[in-house]
Amino acid sequence: MATIFTKIVNGEIPCYKIAESTNCFAFLDLNPLSKGHTLIIPKKEIDYIFDIEDELYSELFIFAKKVAKAIDIVEPSLKIGIAVIGLEVRHAHIHIVPQHSTGTLNFKNDKLKLSNDELSQIAKKISDNIK
Image 1: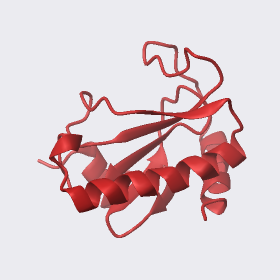
Image 2: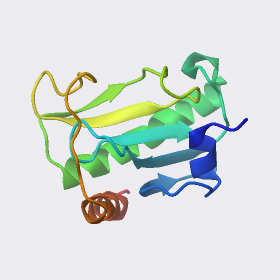
Image 3: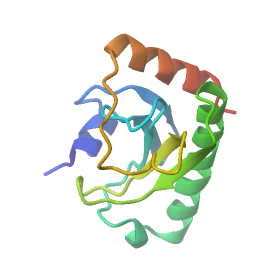
């Protein structure tokens, strides 16, 4: 059975898409730790990030870097953080999160409640700044 992320890539579930390439896909997290919190995934459904073949692994992180630089323009922060947890969805994914303090990347923190309009605007701004 396809993961929720595969269903997002296939257009079966809507998302706030940031960017995509032939092999990678980026979209906003609906329960963000901070504004601009984005998920980066390989389109190919692979559970464990360290099982990704080297070429795709490199491509995924280079893609994440481009997205992170765009997020930093739209949602200025101290730094853009990165986390790979992979327990909640069995599809490899990278969290890219604007950090405003040392505790921003704590996934036990309360999540932001953003409106659909806010999420849509953030996604568009980030997408427009990808180089």
